Image 1 (cartoon, helix red, strand yellow):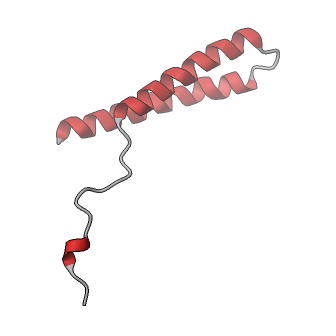
Image 2 (cartoon, rainbow, N blue to C red):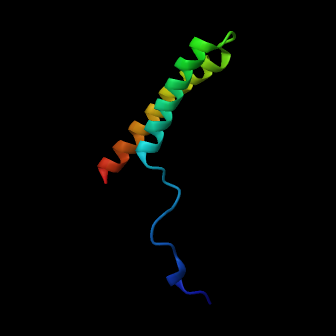
Length: 68
């Protein structure tokens, strides 16, 4: 028989909202730099299109943290 005392107390794997926020800021800054310096701004467009997703995840994680 196994004991129930081995269950984890806190679920792991939650990323704080500010990690998403800073990641989105980095993606936005990288896109801006790539647009200025690159001859083929494909990567810049990918960064620019991906940065709002980071802001969305930051908002979602912040809202979930506030609801607790």
